[in-house]
Amino acid sequence: MEITLQHFESCPSWETTDQHLRTLIDRLGLDVAVRYQLIETPEAAAEYGFRGSPTVLIDGVDPFADPDAPIGLSCRVYRTDTGFAGSPTFDQLEDAITARKPRGEIMVTTIDRIELLRLIDEEGAQIVDVLPAPEYADSHLPGAVNIPLKHLDAESTSVLNRDKPVVVY
Image (cartoon, rainbow, N blue to C red):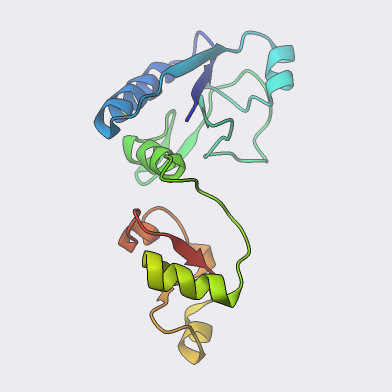
């Protein structure tokens, strides 16, 4: 796993994000160093698609990406449970890191019925049905957990065992 913290020097929130990342890396026992990328010019912001400071990249992916946010040298605003903040919360960062933490490989793929049955029988896969509740009530796979797509987030998936495969349909 590679974690990059992009920021500009006068950003008041990047150090909070850095402290959260360091604490999480230690707590989760990860053998990861945070790479710092100082974005100093509008040209560099454009080159890196920088949407504000601080930006956290996990394996090159911004887990908090807002495609509508402007590119440039600005302070970034994060939506948190308590309102808007200049840094993602500790819990948000933990969710983002653990979602990318290698446990084998996290992957998204299409599987057939035989592979689905194998995952359930041999690996204890959990099934998540993302249909709205009324449609789920009409028809769903036995043992499936209903988490409607519009409610699919870190909190709603906290009922899932992170050590077992998850099949979403």
